[in-house]
Amino acid sequence: MTKHKIYTMSFASVYPHYVTKAEKKGRTKAEVDEIICWLTGYSDQELEAQLEQQTDFETFFADAPKMNPSRTLIKGVVCGVRVEDIEEPTMQEIRYLDKLIDELAKGKAMEKILRKG
Image 1 (spheres, rainbow, N blue to C red):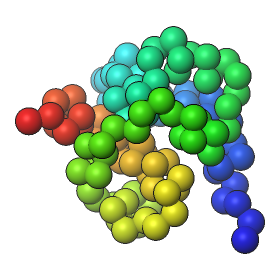
Image 2: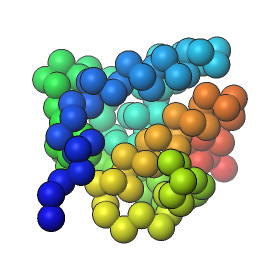
Image 3: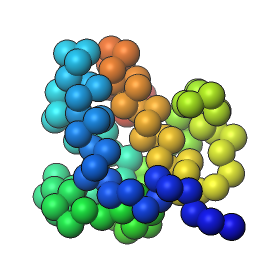
């Protein structure tokens, strides 16, 4: 089975789109970074290093220091697919991130996006 194209794309090539999507709705790059770090366990410095190294999506998630256990609380539809029903682990991680960025752009409070409380 061939890998999905997104797996081999560099995370850094998509990252500006996450930031742009958030900023168009009055949110910030810092909030995008906070979401990514919450999800993956990367520190701000580690995230920056991943971006500089042009790490591909598959490696970005495979090398994540500690995927947040609360990510399983992320529910909903991204690109017409329920994120909780995605069976392929890497694709599910990518879609979790997409869903969190969507929630940010829709104006949801960071506390709710980060599944606190």
